[in-house]
Image 1 (tube, one colour):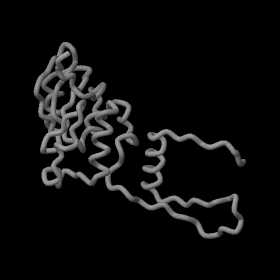
Image 2: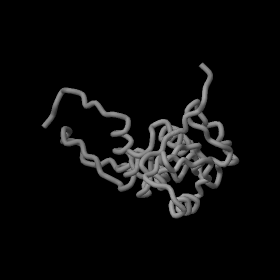
Image 3: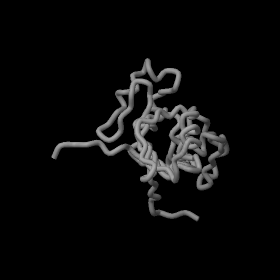
Length: 166
């Protein structure tokens, strides 16, 4: 079936499509042109999956996703984060330090010693905790946001609310 209407793709859909195409080489064939016989193969081009393609992406605020994706697209890794000056990726909403950690508010279902131990095992540096509100303010390694968001007690990751003058 061929349509003359253009297909409108969202950025997230395209990133997911590109990621799934890069995860497994797929063959694309133009069925509208009978003369074409050789398939075109898309190959794997990125090393780390985009956050938008991960199952936990819905638990990560889009400003955090954008900063981390920009870092990944520019080749920032845990090994070169200091040499590549990760703090340059900070925005007015998202702060990134020289070690590539992202300042984050983690909304949790509960906070106890076990939750604290799991977070610190994932290299999370906890600054403040409001157990009653289910809020943990911390620095997370940029390459572990999806892993931390996938933890069962994590409800959502977002940038902290910074004070500002009116």
